[in-house]
Image (cartoon, rainbow, N blue to C red; front, top):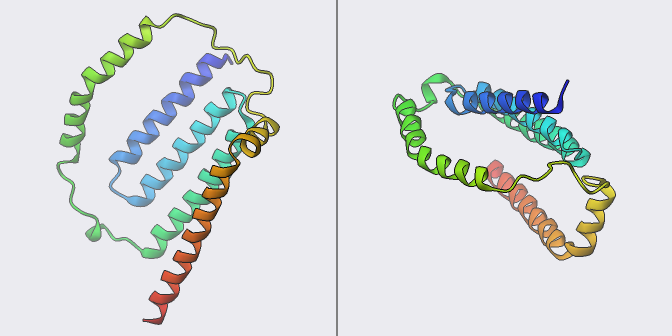
Length: 168
């Protein structure tokens, strides 16, 4: 199968499943549509020969985060009567779509004006884990450490808030 055809199929699946996620009234169905969107995006990363982002997309996002989200939704037991009435949501989505048409047209015109270049990946080790690690730990070590401290503080805060809510 040609890479271009596979790209269009995966892009179409991502588009349709993301529209299904937005238009769904049930949170569990929206989460399942989100999983399909993430898996199709992982396929697009695979087409770009980016094995690391492919694995992260499947293992971290589609595997861990969405599973946790589904667990929370099912644990809370959200009933249909607790979901807000959104009878006007399709009108709002249509209005936003109409408002975005000039913006989208401008973007398409600018893309068509761009000089055509080969879309082939030039670098041999593009998307490799060793290249990412060298970039991350040589050029981006300070932001990497700041993010790890931020995540540690968020973890401690979540445990503290959870412990305080249980004692009340």
